[in-house]
Each structure stands twice: as C-alpha cells, then as structure tokens.
Image (cartoon, rainbow, N blue to C red; front, side, top):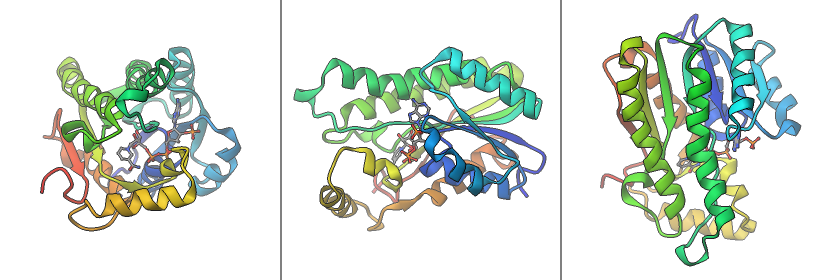
Length: 248
Ligand SMILES: NC(=O)c1ccc[n+]([C@@H]2O[C@H](COP(=O)([O-])OP(=O)(O)OC[C@H]3O[C@@H](n4cnc5c(N)ncnc54)[C@H](OP(=O)(O)O)[C@@H]3O)[C@@H](O)[C@H]2O)c1
C-alpha cells in the first residue's frame, strides 16, 4: 500500500498506460479520478476501476473543461496528492505531409493539454504533491516520421524542469516518465490496417535491445515510484522505460 490515503488524477486514464496506472494506484491504496473523452468506454472503465473511482469526461485542450473537472475532483476528494498528465495522441507526420490540422492536433493535445491540465490542477494540488508528465523515449533521439510527437514531448520534458522550479516553495515535485514502445490501444488509432500495425510492431521490436514491446503495467510501476514518497529526492527528472532503446 504505497499510496495509502492519497488521491490522484490521471488524464488519459481511460485507456492504455493511464488505465493500467489507475489500477495500480488503486491497488496501492489511492483514490483515483480518471479523465478521457470517449464516454462509450466509461461504463467498462468504471467496472474495471471499481465504484470508488471517479471517471470524468473532459478534453485536455480546453482550459474551462479541465477547470470543471478538477473542481469535481476537489469536491469528491478534497485535494490532490498526485497528478499524472498523460493524455496523448499520435499520428505519423512525415515532414513533407505535415499540414496545419495535424500540427494543431498533436501540439494541442500534447503541449497545450498538459499546460491546461497543470494550470487547472494547481489550486487543488496539496503541498508535497507529485506531478508526473508523460513524455516519450523519442524526445531525445527523434524518430523517422514522428517529428511532431517527438518535438511535443521534448517541450513537455522541458515543462517538467521549469515547473519544478516554480513549485519548489509548495514542495510539489514535477517529473516526467518516458515510455518506449508500449502495447496499448494507441497503435490501433494510427489509421493503419491490422496487417500494417503488425508489420510496424515487428519492425519496431527488431530495434529494441530487449527484443519486445513494453507492457502498460511496466510503465505504471515506474509512475508509481515517481508518484510515491519513495522518490521524494527526485525532482525535474525524466525516467526512461524503453527496453534500452534510447540507451544502448
Ligand atoms: N504506447 C506507446 O508506445 C507510447 C510511447 C511513448 C509515449 N506514449 C505516451 O503515453 C501516453 C498514453 O498513451 P497510451 O499508449 O496509453 O495511448 P491510449 O491507450 O490511446 O490512451 C490515450 C488516452 O488519452 C486520452 N486522450 C487523448 N486525447 C485526449 C484529449 N484531447 N482529452 C482528454 N483525453 C484524451 C484518451 O481518451 P479518449 O480515447 O477518450 O480520447 C485515452 O484515455 C500518451 O501521452 C502517449 O503519447 C505512449
């Protein structure tokens, strides 16, 4: 019970990495609120997380929606010990084909969304809270065809540093988690056929030193460390969990 008595808000907590982290947090004793957009999945998410969990609809790109959501979290939980700003969206963006809409879609969810999430949560975060922002292993190395996502995540990695400074007086720590290639529903949203997804995975796995995709639970375990008091001397850093991709 490493999060006994704590409260947490997870954006993108209705799928993949966020959902696995919500489950782990609950197992470790936390009360958890999750945010997503697709309400058709909410009943299933509620069933997976249990009746105590708060499942909220909000678009992280909207400052107003995020303020409404965090107000509801405050009413339900009284305050927040953990914020996991994790909502994200990926599409391939080879340089020649980037258009204004793709640019806005990626930057708005990944950068603006994290800024508005953090802003809305600020009044609700308790002294000593832990904030974890989801970046990606490609924010340091880049990746063919994924330049916008890599750039957006590099911006988020930078935000973790600046906000750590700004929040020192409230003893709020901000760190980043950088997943490698993780098996989640995100891959099914790339607009590729099933065969293309399988080919993408096989090609990707051939570049991973440990020769497999990661599991959402492996990211949840690392987020748990950053969220818990065990990491109380860890400030402004990025924890990379990528099977060695960016290191070997
Ligand atoms: N999977 C990987 O290989 C990988 C690698 C590196 C980094 N990441 C990062 O990890 C994070 C989680 O990804 P995942 O793999 O778990 O993907 P996922 O299964 O597709 O989950 C994404 C979550 O974000 C939510 N979301 C997306 N846009 C949103 C918006 N505008 N407002 C509110 N919620 C929104 C989705 O809810 P709805 O479906 O309801 O919109 C969903 O709950 C992302 O930031 C992603 O960039 C993933």
